[in-house]
Figure 1 (cartoon, rainbow, N blue to C red):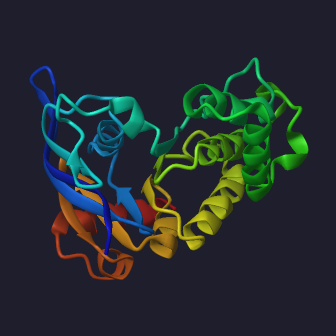
Figure 2 (figure 1 turned 135 degrees about the vertical axis):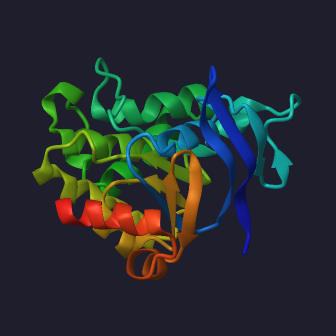
Length: 246
């Protein structure tokens, strides 16, 4: 299998507080990997280290065979290869839906306006938002905003899509529409790394599930193994707690 990202001995500290401790795992091309764990376990920090929104304190991030933490590496070029979908949508409020998906393509990828619009329309259609191209974010529901945010990230045609709790800011009735889009993307063969608290979704769409606890990877395996036959007590404990709430 072709590895896209390989994380080796990754650490991250904020002052004296060590948030990530010796993290090792990889993501293969076309694979869907879900990261689960309780709040404060380091899941979002790991995602932010992978796309360098946070600078790791140590270790390596190997992307297509090169350590991108080397001083010589072209960070903006690497970032362009990663699509990121945040909890809070992060749309440009002064732009309409279409422009939200076009601006980055023109500025970062130097695409022409025509080409950028054509690509944006393709992905807005995929997420079911092509009828809303003239709407401003404030006119949209949370679920619609998040679908636009997904289309915007896809419009950059990244190698890997990173999702950081993409449904946690949504009202319960809107969660389904976003998960449906993500499920379709997973089935299309897109490489996806998803931090999520939606256990049923993680079970259904993931090729692999990583369980984090207190800054370490406590366990990883197939959804079948993690959900039905976890090896670690703390995985069992977490699942018992989480599945009881849902």
